[in-house]
Image (cartoon, rainbow, N blue to C red; front, side, top):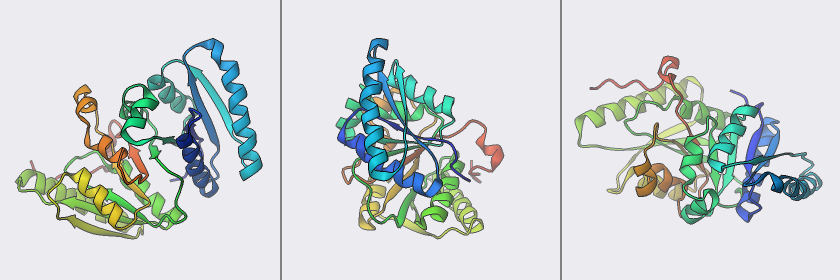
Length: 277
């Protein structure tokens, strides 16, 4: 796996957008991928002014980092504009800044998870500047099937950053969930072993949700990232009540979270295979 396509950074002139750009620059230094700032305006007449303001960011970044950014300004809704830009430019990754739950709502006008789930590219959601070290990635595993892409990224990040993958899961009293989760753990172990990735497996002993326990574990090991899948065909109720993904994305520890969207038909490429039920 290689990142040759552009890395997109949604830009709203906020401090956390600047954090996202710093993370994107770190990625680009390893992957040699280009970076494009994406700004969405409500009206066409705002486009020229937005481009002028963005050009200042482009010039400052080139002077500071020696990197030339592209800039993209779109009219419309952020819910559709980001995903359309991802598809048009065949973007490999979107790096987006947020102020946690409140900031996510402010950024999108509703729920950031809707923006993420509507895109074909993975999202790296950040709340702070990059850490100097990026040594450990928490990789929660549950009973769901569509997680092949998450393993592909885990292997890639291990190879590129030498970051150890920490597979974590919860024990369940439900026999079907237990069987499916165990099957996914075995598949993950076999896949990462085949790729020569450095990893370990951790059973989460706490009584809280997998989301809460994964965040706590990431805090304990000072992880540089949590790697998750977004829920396929997420419902409106999930946005209102807060899906597990949204909880992890907005974590109070400000740990970066990479969200991988499941693709249709992924099972034919060797996705997770459950042995139960």
